[in-house]
Image 1 (tube, rainbow, N blue to C red):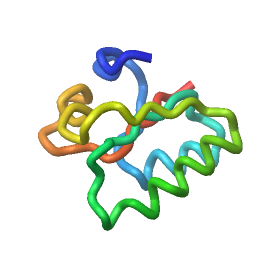
Image 2: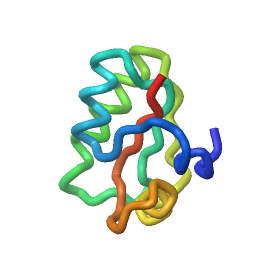
Image 3: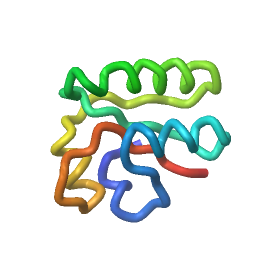
Image 4: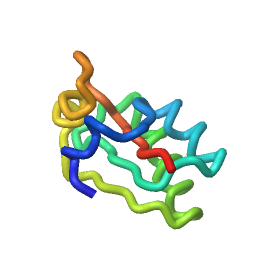
Length: 84
């Protein structure tokens, strides 16, 4: 999936919200910032593991700035989940 789609799809923004929706089975695709801060590395590992268990594709080719801009928010985004 292309990052340009983030402007128009239903999504979660942030590691905590994305992980919650993965647990509910509501996520079909995940973007992770490739330059995530050390303090959020552990939640990203949990997200990666949860995605692997549920067969959800993960894209980690974009920076947190790229994800934030694509979601039209003024801050960086660690994780973005595309909802079903």
